[in-house]
Image 1 (cartoon, helix red, strand yellow):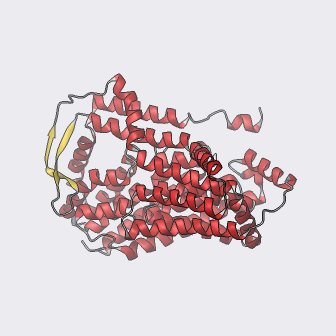
Image 2: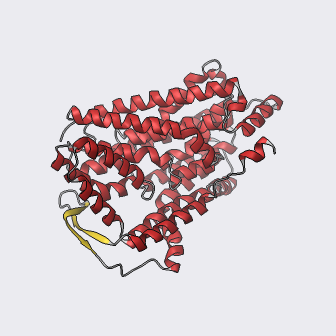
Image 3: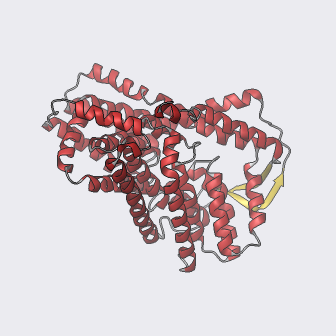
Amino acid sequence: MSKKENRNRFNFPHVYLMFLLVMLLVVALSWIVPSGQYERVIDPETGIEKLNTDVFTYVTQENSIGFLDFFSALHNGVVQSADIIVMLLFASGALYLLEKSGAITAGIHKLLRIAAGKEKLIIVVLLTVFAIMGTIGFGEGGIPFIPLAMAVVMGMGYDRMTAFATSTMGLAIGFTAGAVNFYTTGVSQSIVGLPIYSGLTFRIISLVIFIAITSLYILRYANKIKANPLKSIVADDYLEQLDDTKKATYDEEPLTWSRKIALLGLVGVLVGSAYGAIQLGWGLPQLSAVYAIYAVFLVIVLRLAPSEAAADFGIGAARLLPTALAIGFARSVMILMTQAEIIDTAVHALAGVLSDTGSVVTLLTLFLVVIAFNFFVVSGSGKALILMPIMGPLGKILGINQQVMVVVYQFGDGFTNYFWPTSGGLMAALGMSNVNYADWAKFSWKLFMILHFTGFVLIVIAHYIGLGPS
């Protein structure tokens, strides 16, 4: 048996099948876990729906999950994820115009010349750029840029896994640190009554630590596979990549002024989107609009034929359709859990278990619970609305600052968004990058263990220094 055949014996099922299996698990749990509900009230000051943790009742499940409900959840999941999906389709369409024009290839060739002898620095810089994107809330919003970064890293002679990790782990650690991430930090702080983005210094320090750990891990792997390509997790693909590079003969694409302006426009899209999200409160519709404007900008700057450009925009968007469905199917899991009314029951049981434990044990338990809960409910803001109304009062009872409870939630939520197979965003990134989930898990599990351990150490430090405001 060849090495390649041996590697392929234990393939993970297709991502769609994985979501169906998790949905079946939810159905099974709906027959075991009793349905229950907390009373929900609207905060008159913020307008955010909160759970009244003093009022919980078990209920009779009148709307049990039927055969048709199970498969209807797939449709509803795609519909409820439409805002994310549409933004990604617009981004993919616009970036395809840039790619087909040759501007991306020309820019990469130029960057590779500059990077000669500085390959490790380029990896750290790209990781940091993606971490900054993540820390301002770019989760799925950063996915369209992953293939661009991968082209640079692979062009420097590293394997596909190094390239994917450089960009994806940047988003992971940035989103987790969440210095100005509204989806986790902002929503959680609003729920427990903290000033938005308070505790900023601690989160920035955490981000720097996460960047240092991740950089060392990726560079260690990159050095190993550069010295011996057979040690690459994707060795077959890497050897083929190196062979193709040796055989490749091509004329370097010239970086003309029009292409330079097009690439500067891409930088403008990134900076403008970040500013809009932080300062102007932009959501996904506005980000979609930015990519639509950028597509028109490219037609003008690159002097593209409008009708041909419109057709190419559709082709570029179509490339993301399998990924878009994965995002929708991930939402289907949450839809079934909501219909079964078992989320509040799980949270109520958690609150009962933790009410008599010490602070550090509570912090560790909550940290692990958020990590596990994220397998089923990936949405950062959605999970915050479920868990923070419980975690906030628990903190007050046990003398744990509310800021610390927010950090527990952030660190428990963020990392596994880029590890659990139920994460639509991760599956989207893997699909766009032609990376197998099993290979990604093999590469990243040790890194995620290290990051989670570091995250908990930081949580304990935050608790003992009394990270405020409380």
